[in-house]
Length: 369
Ligand SMILES: Nc1ncnc2c1ncn2[C@@H]1O[C@H](COP(=O)(O)OP(=O)(O)OP(=O)(O)O)[C@@H](O)[C@H]1O
Ligand SMILES: [Mg+2]
Image 1 (cartoon, rainbow, N blue to C red):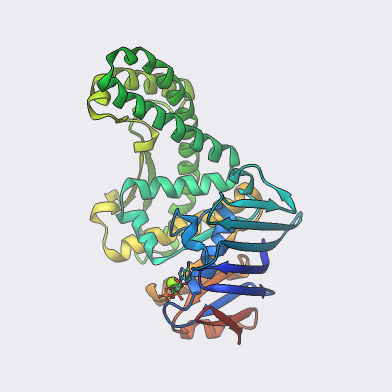
Image 2: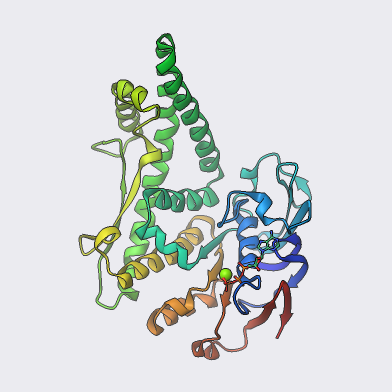
């Protein structure tokens, strides 16, 4: 898919911005703090309904203003899609898809798909399990809106159960209502685990192949789902049974703690290179390459699942990679429309040819060069 138009009103440091794109490679250059990432962020927001930098919409609205508007037009195989998002200080965000008001954020998923890669993505390997769950959740949600709804549902049920656990500490008679929540958690949680297993299996295979190509010494990358609920075979019936059993047998512990100790909200991805856990033992370079492999796999995976390549959003990452990996990344521009922010213009881009547009950003103003 191709992003053809982007317009922003009162978004971050842009009071008004209107851009039209006609190339595969869009370079957004400028000094620090001028508004480069803000542009990528607005595109990512149009893909997923949320910023990759903050959960708080009010931070996205130009200071001193009450409302902000982000409008994107993408061209896909089946035709164009127009997405309009209105953020407001007072109300929840409003989304219009091809002129129709969306009832839920989830309806946005799949209209514009994007893979964002920024230096903070190193957290994907080095950070807490929550980072890796977010990676899976974002990706699967974009491919499968049903997953997004189930995730929202799971979080709702989980917070009900957690509140109940705290209340039981005050009022023991409430304990008899726990099984109702156990059953719901086990049911929705099992669906989430099944989808994540499926995702991990697919992306793991792609990532292994890509990693072999881009790592210097033919390394073997392995990605495995690491569940907190044990099971022998990945069948829904067995997982749900074990899930329920674990929830039931953790009642005392959970009540004491006031929260649910086990479940898909605690799960992780194990990432290893040549059988060594990269999360703890990988060198900087290995971690960076593993993240790059996973990000490139996201692109391939979206293509396989939806028949369409997503937008690739690269925030300041080119300078972080060595020349060989830069070249590997550049091979994607042929088939994937890429938006790339830079502070310094690297020599390697000179070779790409004419299918690119360069914009210079300064203090919330954008000039095409
Ligand atoms: N809600 C807002 N209202 C007004 N200005 C904002 C708002 N949010 C952020 N900014 C401004 O946006 C600028 C930062 O933009 P951005 O993060 O896109 O910079 P950048 O060009 O990517 O910089 P770097 O190269 O350091 O990553 C800062 O000057 C910041 O003050
Ligand atoms: Mg930036």
